Length: 258
Image 1 (cartoon, rainbow, N blue to C red):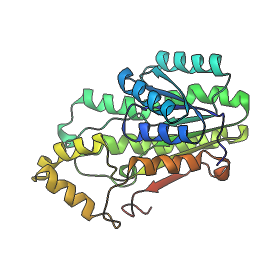
Image 2 (tube, rainbow, N blue to C red):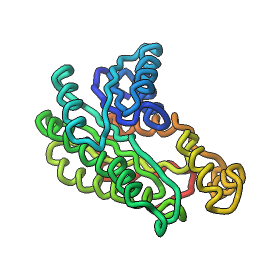
Image 3 (cartoon, one colour):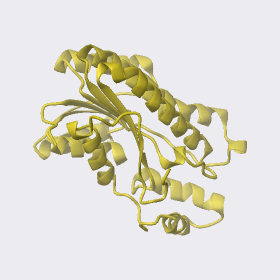
């Protein structure tokens, strides 16, 4: 896949799917701008990319804050003169029944997962329109397609990401900009481990038992590796996939087929 010398902005690149995506794209020869609210984590990501022979810069950014997003995007454009690819990986999750959900927690999840995608895509798209090319990938979830007990606000936030993806894809198509969403299923990350710890008790079982319960519902009988998500993203942002736009693509071991 020809990705050499492209400039890629990855949000949430400090760990999990975001880090795996940054490392994978770095291996394909892109210049990775790793962003996150945790500077220590993205510094490590950037260093690992360089150790593997890639190019990377790290920048602190809270995707839910428009001023921060605009400053980072403007800085990248000023330094590198372009952004070819945006991958929106920044995300948050909480567990609990909607009837008991605190309003502040609702706002936090929606701000990061949905507003963050809107703001970052908006800022980057304005420059891509001038370039008349670009690719945006949003990390959604299979929870966006089928609601889950104890996972309501996350499901809602990711369903909104799917609609943002479709709308941006239609609005940006005249400028040769592709926009797609990736919908991972259960993925072996720190966030998923936190889900086991918090949602197991909601289901009345231990975290280990809850993990077993979830995996038993996956036809391929395992969780995804973050690197597998990264490889799918590498394909989606390559020229080999330039006729794909407005799609919400599952990578869930058969857990979700719609």
